[in-house]
Structure formats: structure tokens, C-alpha cells
Image 1 (cartoon, rainbow, N blue to C red):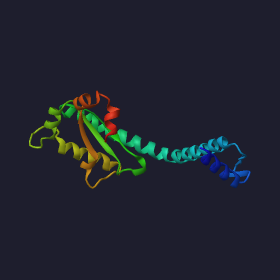
Image 2: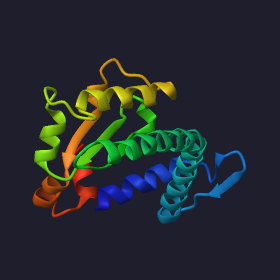
Image 3: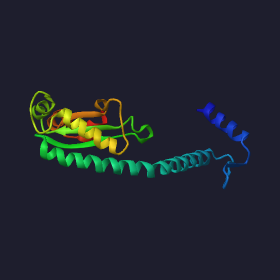
Image 4: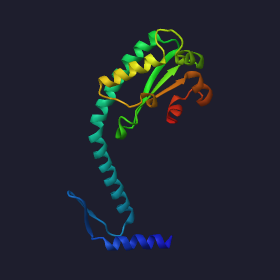
Length: 174
């Protein structure tokens, strides 16, 4: 403990008394180490806020565009696909579109298996759904070399059994 206090005091002694962290902020360092820590944290948070607020506007536009496209697809799927329940998307906008994942949820494994069976003649199967999704995303200039790497199929029953119905916890694993 004495070593870390001594190190902090040495660092404080090496700094000028009036240190300028930003062009418009003068900070009196003095001996009070707690003030230095608080000031540094505040400046870091302010810088992060500035950085994220610049990205948020673009991200919100992208997210809104995705939400609209996926809602259209969802509305169609509810009518055409037996057992289809809902879909959502997960994305890290700093790695967009590579990080985009579309999660498609069915009521149970039986209906998901029927949907995935390409040999069955039905209104809409997995291949057709993926093609519709790909076309929707392409209309927003979002394209992938292999869209299958960005689509995850899941079921309500699996979530209930494995995560007690907690979709937030389940989606974190993707």
C-alpha cells in the first residue's frame, strides 16, 4: 500500500500544478489524488460520450432501416410459415454489416424442422425465406458473401427449456 501511494505521489509531483487536459479546462492537481482520478474519469467519459454520439445518428438510421425491412419480412412470414413466431437482429455497429445476425424464432422444433426440410412443398421453406431476407437486405445495400452465416434459427421451446424463457440471456450467446 505504501508503495502505490508513494508512486502516485511521485507521479503527482512530476505533473505541473496547472495541467490542461482539454483546451478549455484548467485543473489544479495539487496533492489530492482523489481529485485527479475523478477528473480523469470525467474526461474519459466525456470523450466516450462524444465519440458514441457521433456514431449514434448513423447507427440509429441503420437500425431503423433494418427494423422496417425485417418487420415487413416478419409480417409476411407470420402468414406464410407454420410455427413462425418472430425475428430480431443483433449487431455491433462498429463492425457493421459483418456483425449482423438475424435470429428467426419458431414455436417448437417440429415446425422448425418442417420449415428446414427442403423436400417438402409448402408456401415458404427455409431456402425461400433466406432468399426473401437476402433481397430485403440488398434493397438497403446490405450484402453478404454467405448470408447463412448471419441467420440463426431458434425456438420458443428451446429458450424455455434452456434459459427459462429469458430471451435476453439466450440472445447473448449469439
